[in-house]
Structure formats: structure tokens, C-alpha cells
Length: 158
Image 1: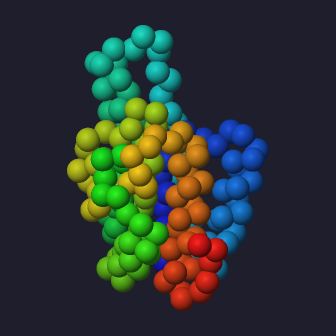
Image 2: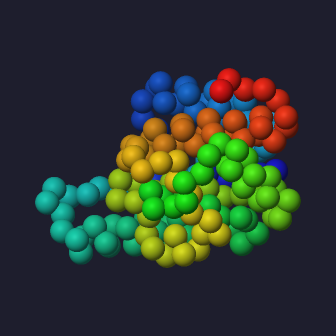
């Protein structure tokens, strides 16, 4: 299976990069993962709704240009369906069976453009809390690793 994670912004801190590398190494037993980073648009101080909307459109255009047609697209968004680790494992398994390729999208600090959400086959959420998009990438990687362990019938710390 191939997984593409499209994310707005870059990992800047070494400890986040190290955590991501560790989970990517663990996941590599089960799938090939590609990380595509989209530059996050600088939000001017006191930006109005119109400016923020334009920034979302710009980020959305960049995201949409990276989505492959033959992929099961999943948008990570706070208003998405709450999923458990087991439900994510089922989603990963289903995507593998249907298309063999899964794309997961993490937006920036403004979220995701509505066009990206509409393009998604599924919208999911890991909770109603707001996480920095850099940290969300690590949480997603850990949950993907957990999903593969669940699907393989292997034990993993609960």
C-alpha cells in the first residue's frame, strides 16, 4: 500500500522531525509513505476574513494539485467524523482494498479550503481539540502505525 500525506507547513523543531522519522521507519514495514509539504501562507497581523479566505484558496490550490486521481482521499478536519483507532484501521484497510493508495490531508492554521474537503472521500477527526498542524502530523503518523499493527493482528501498547 502507498500512503501520501499532504500537509501545510514544515516540521521545524528537531524533536518533531525525530518523532516523524521514527514513525515513518515503523510504518515502512507495512506501507510506503510519502510526505508532501505545502508552504503555509503567512497570515498578516489583523488579517480580515477576506484575506484569510484568499490564503485558504491559495493553500487549497496547492493541495489539490498534489492529489492523485487513483487515491482514496481523507481530509483531517475538526468537523470530520470522530474515529477510533480501530475505525481508522478499518478505513486504511478499506482504502488499500479499493484503491491501493491513500492520501491524507492536514491543513494549516486556518484549516482546509472547502474545495479540498469536498474532494475528500472521507473527512475524519481525532477529536474536537485544536492541535498545531506540526503536532497533528506526528499524531497521524502514530495512529497510522497503530492502524497497521491492528490490521496485522499484532499487539501494540494500549
